[in-house]
Length: 266
Image (cartoon, rainbow, N blue to C red):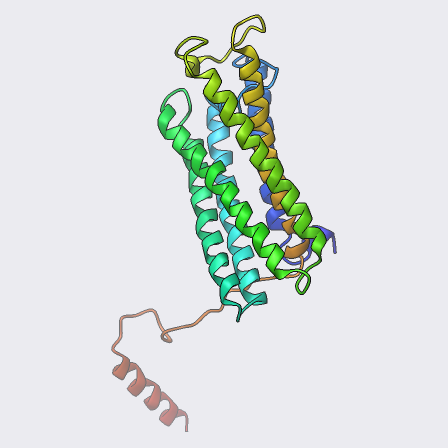
């Protein structure tokens, strides 16, 4: 059995690989068609113009679904490992709620492009990255509370490191974006897809785009830390029938009919 076949470890693997592929494929398509500059464009800019917009949208929607599945499994695992610790249970529920909100934000990013509905796109980005960073914080705190009984200290330090990477990327992107869109370097920069290195504001633009790519891959790196944990868990659905047929038959009639069948067989 391969390592990704153990338990549900394929879920975080699929989430990371598929999400990274959605960024890379959209980037390559946009570059080949000369829709954006090759040097570190905004991720959203690579999904603004058809046909890459269609590819970007559908792949990110699937990423959002994989994200929800991964976060739900993580929620069930933490609950199963700590059924009597009220503090961990509360944090776990908060984490699941934040995670689902972050995935919803990813759907908004996928379906509302930056150059068309900018403010809605920004709301989606805030949900995805802002709320998503808080989700990472909650999961890091849970990792701290569960070590060393449930897992080693190493996984806590790894998640803490990735969280700090994420937060530094958010700060860098926020500051550079505020400077870039402050009006000092012109207006209508949201619609701008091509930049000249000699233009004013180019440095702030590059810092902002590099920070965005760094932020995206910090998120993916955090989910890579779930792989080993997910090798230790599996879920199954339990089927519970409410009747022997799919007809809307009164329960008393079904009971009498079963009694007659049993009597007849005797």
